[in-house]
Image: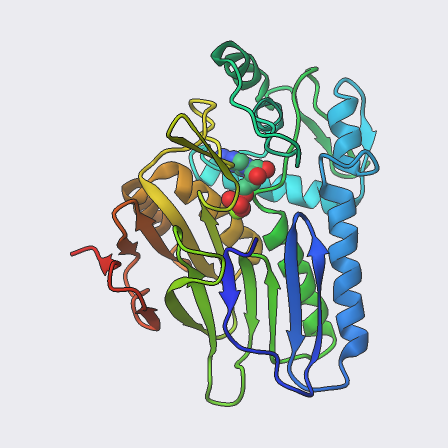
Length: 329
Ligand code: AMP
Ligand code: MG
C-alpha cells in the first residue's frame, strides 16, 4: 500500500518501471526516453537490497545473522553500512528508531504477512528484554556481524526503503540522469525538476482516507521524502488500533498522538528512519529533535485531530487539500 502518492502521471517518452519489492509497490520514472538500461540497474539494486536485508527471508544475510546469534556471520558490505547508519540513527533519535527490535516485531507478528495477533503481555516483556544489541560485535574489515545474545535480532524495515533510494540516487548520478522520480511506496526521491522551472509535486496520503486520498501536496526539487503512519499496517482489536511501528520503550505499538509523519531532506535513509522515529516520539519531541540535530531536514506531522505540525519553513510548497486539516497555530 502506498503511503505517498506520486501525482505526476507518467508522461509518454519517459523511461519507467514499476513492481513489488520490500513489501511495497514501487515505481521508477526517469524523464526522457533512452534510459531503460539505467532503469534495469535500479531494479537490480532494489532486488539486491531486498535480498540482503530482508530479515524474514531465509536466503538473506540478515536472516543468517539473526539465526546464528552466537557466531560471526559473514555479510556483504551493504549490510555493515546499513547497520552502522541504523545505530547512528538510534543514538540520534534517543532510541526511538531502533534496528534491534526484531524479537518484538516477531512477537507482534509484524514481519509476517500471516495473521496479526495481540501477544500476551508476558511475551511482549520477554521480547522487549531480548530486543537489545548490547553484545553486538561488528567487524567492518572482516565484514562479519555477531549478535552475541541468543534471542536478539535485527530488522531494517524502518530504513530499508530509504537506503535503497540512496543507492539508486548514486546510480542516477553515475549515469548522468538529472530528472527522475523514484517512489518506493512512501519513500520518494525527487531528482532535479520535473521539467525546467517546474518542481515535482508529491501527494501526502490522507491517514484515514482511501489509498488514493491525499490531504496535502508538497513541491520538491532534488530531495527525498518518507512517510510513516499508523494506516500502513494495522489491526483494530476491541476498538484499539495496533500499528506496525513499535515503541522501543514499552514494546507496544507506538501511540504518540501522531497518525502520519513525513520527513523531507537530502538523504533517503535518514528521512525514512526519522519518519519512523517521529511517529514514536510524538510532535513535540520530534520537532525539537529535528531542529536540534537534523537542521537540513523538514517535518510535516499530523495529529489525531488532523492538526498539522511542521518545522519552520516547511509550509512553503506545502498545500493542504482537505478542509479538515489545519496548521497548528
Ligand atoms: P516505516 O514504515 O518506515 O515506519 O517502518 C516500519 C517498519 O520498521 C516495521 O514494519 C518494522 O519492521 C520496523 N519497526 C517498527 N518499529 C520500529 C522502530 N521503533 N524503530 C525501527 N524500526 C521499527
Ligand atoms: Mg521509516
